[in-house]
Amino acid sequence: MNDALIELKNLSKNFEDQQVLKGIDLTIHRNEFLTLLGPSGCGKTTTLRIIAGFEEPSGGEVLFDGIDISKVPSHKREVNTVFQKYALFPFLNVYDNVAFGLKIKKMDETVIDHKVKSMLELIGLPDFAKRDVTSLSGGQQQRVAIARALVNEPKVLLLDEPLGALDAKLRKDMQIELKKIQREVGITFIFVTHDQEEALSMSDTVVVMNEGIIQQVGTPEDIYNEPENRFVASFIGESNIIEAVMKRDLLVSFDGQDFECVDKGFKNNEDVEVVIRPEDIDIVKPENAKLTGTVKSIVFRGVHHEIVVETEFRDYLIHTTDYFEPGLSVGLTFGPDDIHVMYRMDWESESRGGAGR
Amino acid sequence: MKHYNKLVRPYLIWSILIILVPIIMIVLYSVTTGGNALVNISFTLKNFTKIGEPIYLEVIKKSLILGLISVSICLVVGYILAYFITRFDDSVQDLLILLVTIPMWINTLLRTYAWISLLSDNGLINKFLSLFGLNAQTFMYTDFAVIIGLVSDILPFMVIPIHTSIRKIDPSLIEAAQDLGADKFHTFTKVTLKMSIPGVINGVMMTFLLSISTFVIPKLLGGGQYMLVGNLIENQFISVGNWNFGSALSIILTIIILIGLRLMKRFDKEEKEEAE
Ligand SMILES: Nc1ncnc2c1ncn2[C@@H]1O[C@H](COP(=O)(O)OP(=O)(O)O)[C@@H](O)[C@H]1O
Ligand SMILES: [Mg+2]
Image 1 (cartoon, each protein chain N blue to C red):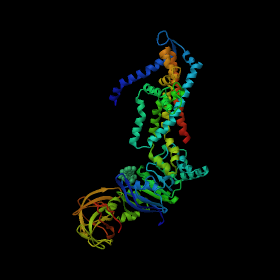
Image 2: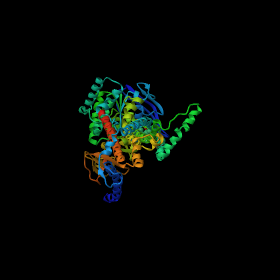
Image 3: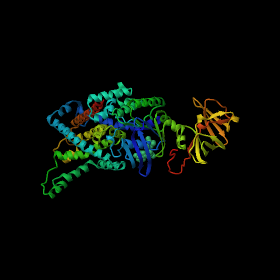
Image 4: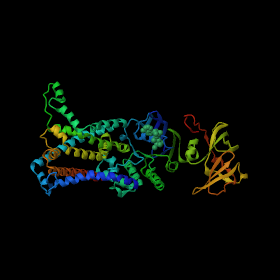
């Protein structure tokens, strides 16, 4: 996996006076399923469009197989795109949409026919060749868009929120299907989404972005378990984020108590932030815990209960399958490895958040 | 909604009166004799058979050919113009389209007189030619004059629908074509052109309709002897006074236009089916 295919080097992009990308450094490997994750407007689409060749970067380089392609027009790049709203050609049927790229390359008719048919097979629409694309459902159009791109055998497939327009059930199915297709064709996928669950469930690598800056790059497990800063922690799932002081290695202090933890490498008495996932907190009898409070609310969420416990310092969010009566006095416990210590983020400055530890 | 319906009713009745009554009158005239008196009328088809006479067939044929030539020139010029307008920023596009439509606000008669002052034997064009020592040319009262007058008259009706259809093409379709390997030329032929066909069809229909029913332009630029269907009809009503024959001619003209519309629709459908 350390076989670099695309390298973005100090990439920046300005639209008029607005700086949309502020120095993106990213290496994308062969056969990797990489996801750009971040809130709307953070520059995901812009990054993708620069890789596709629809936008020119204002600064920095885009290396493809080690060669700078910033000036190469999009029709000469070995990447294909699945557009956000599919962008199928309404005047062509399914077959001719898929065959479009091959016909442009003036391939032999029989070769085209073979490729298009096996691609329609792959996306599970073998009998749809003659269908009008406007008569297809959203999910089917989606598949055709994927087939139209993949049939060209690109080295990289770019997908911009491709599942955004689908309903929840279809979305889940397509997530699994996309992952399967990626394994089958064995090429790099660069996937854009603002849905953290989608990103975590599909990707080999997740790139969390905010305001044109990369916040963290890592495996889904890394991102979830070891968020590097408050932004990543709060964007990836619900969590308790607590201002704390790192007393020394393996000892962190917050809410008037010292807790053992597994983090080290901070300065002694450095201001930090701690994230504790709601499912990592256990509710126990008050006498068995360092932190105590009362149950403020409890909401059933299908699999678990979402409980808010009010303590002297703050409200804690807890996910548990057990039921606790509101008003009950309880204690809260968590183990050393449930505490994730992060650098404290300086929201005022433009400095890059969480540069790793 | 009910309330609204009631308010619309007087308007509806007026529209029916204004649109329907003249049509009924024309149909009635066309199958009767007795001029515009409407007394002592008797039914006949001879107004229609009269159209079969060679001189009248010749006029219809000439009108059709002239219409087709003008529409074809208009299509080529109009498409290029419309396409280049879409290359500009939105605000510039609005301005350019406004410029294209300005002639439409000016009375046809005035515009045609402007052409006369340009084309006449001692008009501006000949004055310009004489600067280079070239002999004066006769433009007036030729097919050329009629066609140039007609084309300039109907051009906006070609440009506007084509421009609208190109402008509303989803930019991601253009990007999709480029993404799939199409260079500028292929992106144009494979996407832009295809997507603008509805605009082309609208433009051709409108300009054909206008060119086939014109009578002011051929009269002024073609001269008194220049006879197109529009002039023929005008003459029947105004100078000859044969309203019955004039009505039959207008009905035939309407039928020709309707056939034209059908053909275009058919062409549009085939275009779509061929794509399937
Ligand atoms: N063509 C453009 N012109 C001006 N501003 C743009 C353009 N494209 C994107 N932007 C701006 O750049 C920012 C990032 O946009 P985008 O990359 O689309 O974000 P995302 O895909 O993460 O939602 C947004 O603030 C957006 O308004
Ligand atoms: Mg986007």
